[in-house]
Image (cartoon, rainbow, N blue to C red; front, top):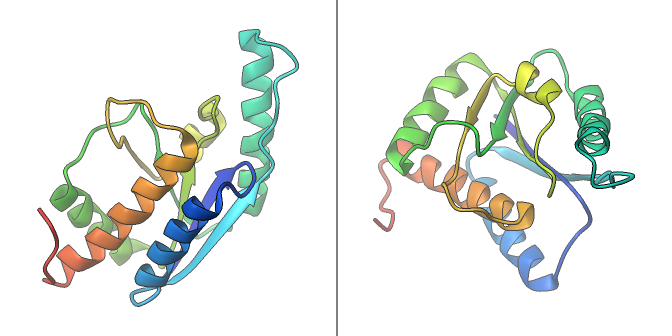
Length: 157
C-alpha cells in the first residue's frame, strides 16, 4: 500500500517536523509513505471570491498530481466525525478497493469544492478548529492508530 499526505504550506518548526517524521516512520512499517508540501496560495484580498480562487489554485495543484487510481481522502471539517475504531474500519474497507491512498489536509483557508467533488472519502477530525499543520499531525497519528487497530495491536484508549 502507498500512502501520500499532501499539505499546503512550507515545513514548519523542527519540533513539528520531528513529530511528522516519527509518525511517518511508524506508518512505514505498514505502507510506503510520503509527505508532500504544495504551495499555499495567498488570496489577493479577504474577499470570499479571492479566497475561493486561491483554494481552487491549490486544488488544481493537487488534482494534477493525482493518478486515476489514487483514492483521495480529505480531512474536512464539513464531513462526518468518526471515532478511532470507526476510522480504522473505514481504512480497512478503503484498502480493499485501492492500493494508493492520498490524504489531503486543506490550507488555512479551507478546501476547494473542486477537491470535495473529486474526493473518494472525507472525514472530520473534530468540531474544534486546528491549524492545518496540527491537523496533519492528528491525521498521521490516526492513520498509524488505524493500522494498530486493524492488526490487533495494543493502542492507548
